[in-house]
Length: 228
Image 1 (cartoon, rainbow, N blue to C red):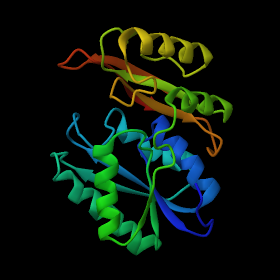
Image 2: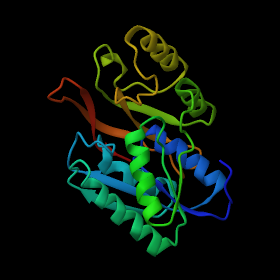
Image 3: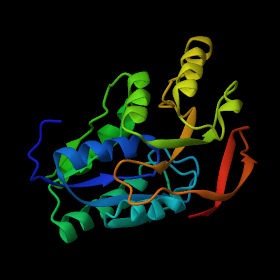
């Protein structure tokens, strides 16, 4: 990212690995003023991460950056109005000049955020855009992130649930990529993640209690019930 370190930004934050890694770039290259957390009532939102999203504010507190929570019903396209509302608030309250996202390949998501930022006269940065997905997983390890898989949504991925992203995990998804033609970083919605620790956390988070559930499509989700 070639950006002025004085540029005031807000990071779209879900508590998963992609927004977490994007935040590390934003902290290195910009002046991060706040996180924006979108809480969707629609578990199948086209735009927003939903598994365990209620805990994103606990993650934000562990990071120590102010945050804005914006609820949305998650109706396709209409949910963008709620995102715009949150970004407008960040611009007014924190005087931000740009938005940072963790988008990797989703043109749908990236283009819609870009439209909103254009309308609000803000910059939009996607530091992970089109990066090699295996290399992104390796970068998480190199930077000492601790990430677990809290949702799997594809045939043959069931054993990934609850696993930590480590060297063994990376080799496993490389194998599955060739065998099942998946996106190794889950960019196609194959799996969702949760960040327990990161270089910028003030304390590591620990899952005290969780349960497993199965959605109507057969996807497995780890529901975090207690976190500290």
